[in-house]
Amino acid sequence: MEGSIKKSAINRLKRIAGQINGLERMVAADKYCIHIIHQSLAVKKALSSFEDFVLENHLSTHVIDQIKSGRAPKATKEILKVYRLSKRK
Image 1 (cartoon, rainbow, N blue to C red):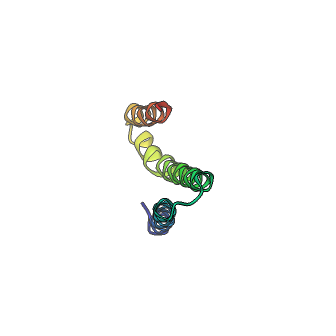
Image 2 (cartoon, one colour; image 1 turned 90 degrees about the vertical axis):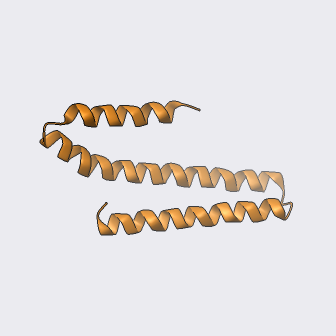
């Protein structure tokens, strides 16, 4: 990852870690369950957004390099593997 992209990714992860710590404090403090669920959903959304961010970086850098160097099948296989993993629940 390029410097500014890496910095942004780390900042996002720190924000998510803070949200998770907040969830832990909410549970420890016996906060209202619905409020805990709202916070949990916010964490899921933040993680999904982080994944989108990393995938966009991967597509615009590594995948392009792989295609240009004749390794398109490898790029396709990697993307399909991630896609299939994302479909599992």
